Image 1: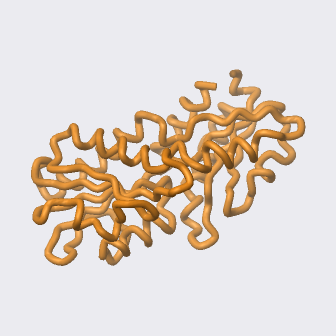
Image 2 (image 1 turned 90 degrees about the vertical axis):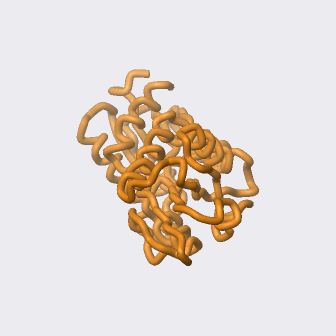
Length: 246
């Protein structure tokens, strides 16, 4: 695909409750627009403006590549996005795999865990790691991405590595049941933004006072909370590589 003749659309979920939910998506779109790699660059959202339809409206390009700003091959990426971008007048849309399917995501997650361990000088063998994700009963693929990351982390010598969820078992609120009874715990939010879930919901369920990156003590346990995924400087090249696969 000739990217110079192709529009790029970053398709995210967005939120009506937290403005930061779409900030990284919009910033990444701006950075890519400035580089001039694509004919046009836009962002569209399920829960915010511009909507997916707005992102398509008025495009000069006859062809668009749609990058799902999601971490899992789940309900939105397999059903909602193909439907929303499947029957468009005058624009041929191709929806790629979600950003979460890229192998670089594991490297980003590993980097966050390693950074937290370095701060406290903890050895991997002493640390339990939790991937805190959304999950949904609507599609099994939603949890699979988080579980795959936990498997990748388990190969790096951590005491244990598990996925926990907002809407599936095991629940984030029950985190003590899935880690060792003692020792430090690193929690890595599996969300592509610093929005409502990653910055408020998950920290609250863990007993943390905020979603800031760093260490806290909760009931006598050391809890290290990782930085949000989706920062533009991390996602920019990933988006280009994914668009180039179409």
